[in-house]
Every structure is written in structure tokens, then in C-alpha cells.
Amino acid sequence: MDLEKVELKVNAASLEAISPPTSTGEEEQELSRLYQDMQNNSLTPLWQIETNLLSRQPNPEAVAWLWKWQNLYEIARRSGELVPIHRGGDRRAIALSNPGLKGKPFATPTMWTAVQWLNGHEVAPAHRHTAQAIRFIIDGSGSWSTVEGDRVFLERGDLVLTPPMLWHDHGSKVDERSIWMDGLDIPLNNFLDASFFEPYPAEAQEVTQVLNGTVLKYGVGQLRPAWEKPSVNYPPMHTYKWAETERALNNLAQVAASPFDDVALEYINPQTGRSVMQSFTCWIQMLRPGIHTRAHRQVGSAVYHVFEGSGETIINGISFEWEQGDFFVVPSWAWHEFRNRSTDRRAILFSMQDTPIIAALNKYREEAFTENGGHQPVTGRFTPKQFQ
Ligand code: 1HN
Image (tube, rainbow, N blue to C red; front, side, top):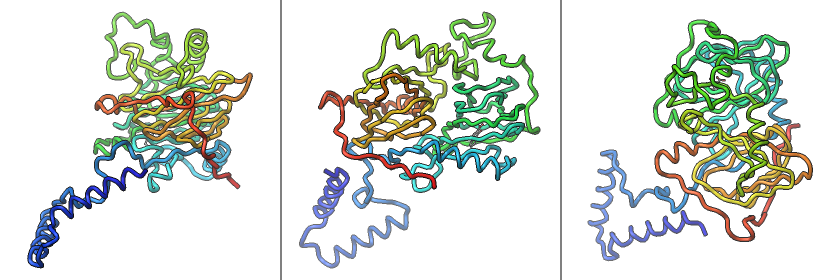
């Protein structure tokens, strides 16, 4: 049943109730003068609002969607050939535009996600902003990110953080191009009218620490330089290396797994246990061979990147088949479950999810799908646009 329509009908009924059937022409004229005066005074009566202000459950505009790696890669590669990196744009980033969001360059209502392409020997110039940002390295080695003077060399699977107003630039000293996933809270930042942005006076920052200093100093996570205070708002290190992440996944797999997400880990600030960003969190999850998780749904949206392997996510009854490199979106309150049909290959998903902001505002809810052994009936298949 369409809940929105039910509520609109209620509104229409209440309208009838306030205009008695015996209303005279004079009363009608008064009523229309009343509405005109409201309009002239920048006022809107609740009973005439056509959109559903308080839906009975989340009714997201963003839709479940999937972008194929083959298309993303080809488009990013051609952009690398044809489009230089300009000051002003600063990044060769191609944003996932959720078709439900009316042409806005956003993957979900709160998150920007893009594929960024950096040619060998290029620099994406230094700047800083209040938008909270991460990047997850998809391919290429030998590029670097410098965050507040700390330069780290990057490899596939590394996660790099740029908390608000920290200077950052990216560059390369090798021939090979690098490709990564960008994640920022741009839609939320703009919705809150909280955006500040500043270009750095030079193209790249000076490196002020030993190379890879952030990883050497804080990378183990369990230990902190004794003379420093805990880093409360953001993690002390700005890069999480893939080798450590993979080790943690393999270790966890020997001990425990979630019935909904299988072997899932949240990247955290090791000094507080909190998410890496305040407005969104990052996860890495391994779906072991043969795993079919149970369905559940949560308030909040998520963007997934398939780091390795292939499989299927069933979102509100629609099957989304994915393979390495693909991206997909799970909107708020959508049932979802994961499946890795391979008998011998793991699948690995990286994701960004806006849970921290939802939870901080006390709006978080989740629900397990209890019928049918926890699995949704599949009613259709998503057919991605294939690049010609
Ligand atoms: C940004 O700083 C990056 O640092 C990527 O890689 C994409 C999109 C808009 C604004 C800033 C990055 C961005 C961005």
C-alpha cells in the first residue's frame, strides 16, 4: 500500500471537515482571502502541504543503484587523457550521481562518492575544507598523499583520511596512474551551510615529517607516543595500510562473524573507538565463500565499493550482481543481504555509511528481516547500463 497516498487522503478529509458543506459564497471568499494573506506573509498552512512531511517510515529519494567498473574505468581513463587538473576544480574526480537525486552529483543524500584518476607525475593541488573526506586506493602504487606535511606513499587498499581543515594534496613520482574512491560529506556540509574551502598558496605542501611518518608513529594503534594526549575528534594517523586491514579481516574470520554482514570491521580512531569521520564511517567486510547473509535494514545510507571478488546484494527484493571495481548504493531503510556464491574465493567490500550522524541525532533504527529464514523473496534483477 502507498503510505504517502493514505496520508494525503487524511489531509484532504480534514480539509473537508473545516469547510462545512453549507458554507456560503461569502465564507469561501473569506477562506481564499485567508490563504492569499498567508501567502503574502510567507506562511504555509500544514493542511495544504501536498508533500508528506512526516512519513510513516523513511521514504528516500535516493535509489538503490549500481555502477559498473568497466564503465567507470573507461570514463576515468579517457578523462585522464583529455582533462588536465585545474586549480579551481583541483581534482579529476568523477562523481556517482544517484538517479533518484535529480541530477545532483551525490551518491546518497549525505555522501559524495567519486572515482579519482591521477596520471603519473601529476599533482592534485593542496587545499583544505570543512567537508570531511576519505579516499580508498583502488589501483596503482607509488602515488602519495600529504596531509598537514605528513607524506604517505599509497598502495591498493589503503585508506587515507582528511579531517576538516587539514591541508592535503596528492601526487605521483611514478609513471603509473593511480585510481581511488573519494568519499566526502559534501551534501550534508552544504545542507548545513557549513562549507569553507581554501586553496593552499603553493601547488604542493612542504613535507615536514619523515616519509610515512603518520603510519610509523601511530600505525599499530594499540600504543601511543607517551608524551602525546589522545586524539579525540579524529584518528591520530591519517592512513590505514591495507596489509594491517587484511590481517585484521583474516584474524576476525577465525573467531566471529555477523549474520547480516559476515566478517565486517569498522575503521576506528584507536584512541576513542569512534568512527574515522564524525559524519560518516568506513567499513571493510569480507564475505567468505558460500556465505549468504540474512537481510536487515537501517536508517542511513551506504555506498559500497567491491574491492575484490564477485557476488550479489539483494536490495528491497532486487538482485544487484557485482564484481571487482563496481560501486553500489543501499538507501535508507532498504532491506539488504549479501551473497558470495563462489566456493573458493572471498569477496571484499569497502563502504562508507552515514550512521554516525544519524546516531548522533538519535535517529538510528535497525530491523532484521525475520520471514523466510531471513532472506527476501527476489522479485527482479538490476540491469546496469552497459558502456558501448
Ligand atoms: C577533494 O579534496 C578530494 O582531496 C576529492 O582527493 C574530491 C571533491 C570536492 C571537493 C574536494 C581529494 C573532492 C575534494
